[in-house]
Length: 229
Image 1 (cartoon, rainbow, N blue to C red):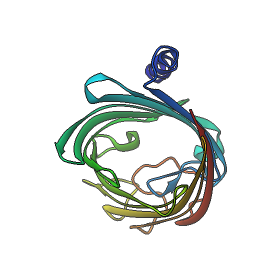
Image 2 (image 1 turned 90 degrees about the horizontal axis):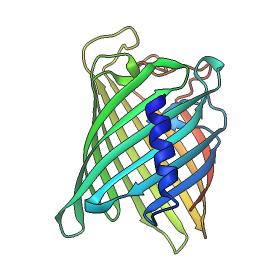
Image 3 (image 1 turned 180 degrees about the horizontal axis):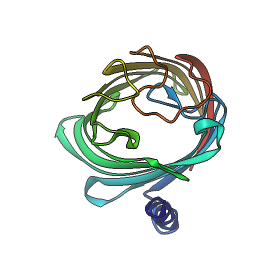
Image 4 (image 1 turned 90 degrees about the vertical axis):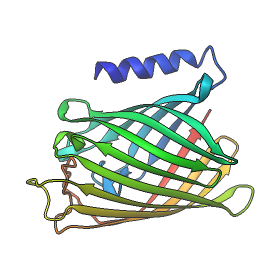
């Protein structure tokens, strides 16, 4: 908890000294993480801060309301990465993330990633030695793509595949796939998104050690509204 608080306060302090810092506040009808609802299919408020440093380094932090077992908690996610050009309009990137849930240290875990990024898509592969604090190791591959429909409208697409190695009490299948499609509208500093998400891959709604709420829907419509600065 302390390391996330330090990282977030540092980034907030930097906003007064650098134009390379941005932030956002958002309200989502359902906080879905890799297809799984971490807010028990209820609304969640979020705050994010991002810093683009010199030499292609970047860092950031996100705090979001989550509801494991009907208890309102805060999830902290901090990250640090770097990006370098691979060829024209294509970069590679690498980074580290650390996620935890306040008041429940059993869900804390670090994660590393490698990826490719262009103007319209982003491909990443993540590795966690102790996914959501439950072990064993997990790999997650994600492809995100967007299409510009007009000056203010974009179509968003996402597909992801999670593989967990070994065996565990939570899983009857080593694989879990998720997909998401959305329509995003932007006006000045405000962003509105309507999305539909689906998850498939096992008999149990929440395998792989995810914090469990009472509701475990595999499909959901959602909406989010955010303001950036």
